[in-house]
Length: 538
Figure (cartoon, rainbow, N blue to C red):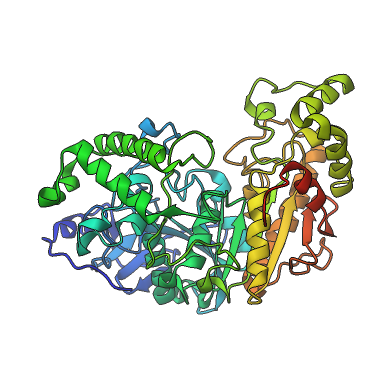
């Protein structure tokens, strides 16, 4: 990938030689690994070697591609998580714990052995849209159990987010050519690092799977669309990772450039003193860019992916270069993703039952009459049709569950699967996670995929689990982690507790229902979705 060069003093050199970061070159049982930039010493947890905060690139300036890591001498300790992208409470999103920095290009590794074995590599991209979050903000992201169970190398990646990763200054010269997509380019840099270095951690650079949930899933779709990432990974997994405006489509270049133009205007910066943006206080940059987004959204008729209000989200930009097209094209899927097998799906309830989790309905139960009244309010004259089709689609669920099934993410999933299958390239496998409905909500499957059955998901489901429920969750963790591991290793999801998982096509609609008794179904919710969204085309 073309990089932009910068001339800097070696200001990082002093930090890289600090005694807190480096140790004597002796192995104390934690394997010392030699990579292209120097020697690393990590930790070990119950037989799994860990290397945290490993730099894969260095961002010396804002809004420009990161550079290669400055080599170090001695042995660098990799026992603590590294800095995360700059984030602000002004956005309304929770701010994760940890040191924040524009130079947040680091990753975490879990591996069963430093032994030359070529293990499948699973690269986790965290959620939070493209605006917030980190690779280490929750115990659900801990890769130890997944690494041990699957004999795989697990990697999680920090990268630039929000205005730092997606402010478009591309209209102002070559230096900022990739500014609108620099957050995703960081991830590309991490994949390039993995290609060069992961063999030293017992991983196979020829068998790399990127997987992510919510915004992390949308990041996978962006990578499948970008020719800059082609050849750097071999399979993709998208968990609840798309809405119509974030994943099916991304931001247009005219809208993106307008945000950049208005942000500079709000800051009093012109083309002649453009580099003054390098020293604007971060919260000021956030504040003025948010104003620019709202103004641009009004001009272009845009709405936020989750809010539905006039606003814009930070996300990748279809610039004709880094992203030549949207992930979903009018008659197919992005060309760069044709040969990449895809596992993709969503949860039955996603955002639809959040009132039961943390809203006014938390802890409540409803009578049959109240359920009917709510169904009538939700679906009007279509109430009986919706309930009937819902129970056909999900025969193990109840009428009350029909109040809380998701279409917001499920419909984009159907569109992505159908267009990907239309390519006649690598297969696409579809699923719907239904266990625990109506608490099969957004993020709840993450700890199960990581085989961390005891870890709470990033959004807690609020349900007190009995012993039987805990056993069921443990079974789901075994099923889902096994299927994800199988897909990473072979390109096909399989588990002992699952029936044969057929690839999805537009004609067969093959979809795995993931529950305590999982089943493969065919076009199970097509009629239901047509009642709810008769004009939606997938």
